[in-house]
Length: 384
View (cartoon, rainbow, N blue to C red):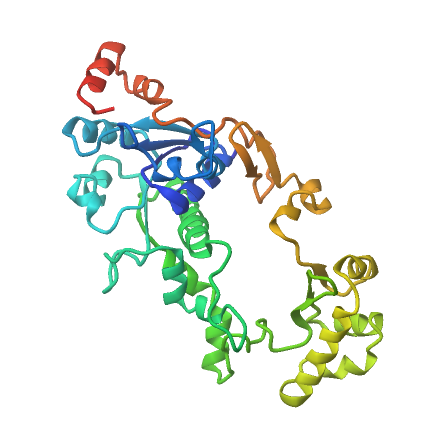
């Protein structure tokens, strides 16, 4: 695998960091999840319902291919052991509030001095500086500040929370993983390691590049009234007869023309991007069209056409959809249901289940020449 032989120390908890390091683990990295020892310790997500065999199904879905080491970083011995791990690691990922790593004696100046080639990635809600740097938050807060939440929903209704934690997963997971890979390339080209300041809010703001550009150019960008948010009849969700919905994404004129022909509404072709009274006419006409038949009927009629229309699936329908099945996206394992990698690159991407708390402590410390007697004393002292 591309990252075989790369050691990643994961000091994060919950969703963002876990998703980031899972991406690296799936590419072959040896991800060591460093967790707090003791009853009820470790990543908080371990104990979040629903549980499967005493461990969270949510944790299992995000922590495959990792090893777990318990280590009390508030103790001198625990910090010393982490320093020794850093000496032989390429990456360290942490998700504490700004300043916490420095107070633990594990800040960037200390770790960089020990291993100049180390890439350290800090994942926070708002970044390392600014008036909100130390403020607590969760995904809904980050997308709210980013302006993304304010755009989600209907024109006359309130903002609607997004179903996926897009700031956590994107700004706190995917974008840090990309930055880590880029920094590692720099190191392999002879450069030094670097400290990556990644923010979930920053990530969410970056996805609004098109909307902000449109607004700066004088175009209206409001909830339920923007280019891809319900303004045009050619890009909307329509209710079907008997329940269920259909997505229409016929942005290109050829697709819209084909759709209008297929549903017997050629008079709507010229109203593709109409607004105001003409736009309302197009919206009402297409609403009436889709309400005339069930979702299954529309799927039968539109599936073979080039019209960019697909049924809106409920979550319990996704795993059995033929395309999802063909791509092997949803898999079952001892830890419950999880998702396969979104990018195929060959190789053995799934090597182990999500680890139990401290499952690999002895194994990892043995790599630092910690023998059984020393390990027993560390356990006695509560260091591991």
